[in-house]
Length: 135
Image 1 (tube, rainbow, N blue to C red):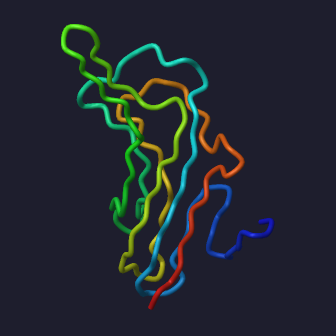
Image 2: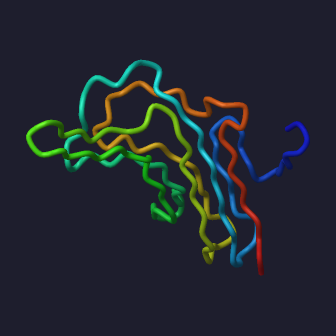
């Protein structure tokens, strides 16, 4: 990886998986920039909440931290009801977790029914996620 990013032998860049090298407490942070690839022409239903999730996938699947897409939710009586994602935005996730050597984690997109095409990592800042051992 090019500076200023740090590489690790426990990060599989192709699969996007990070294997925890030693048991301890870890700080996990992710910033995901996105934009829609077409004009938004449909409102989201009340139960549709797209998000990004840092998930432990092995040995047991567990969602560690999630971040919802920013939404515009407007209800002007008798004129307009609209609930949709913003045309571009940033989703930020952060947390501290006790993890065990050999745990595998990854960053995932959960559409939850969102059908709008997205360009993930759409800006020069793209998608950045980091894992730091605290103790």
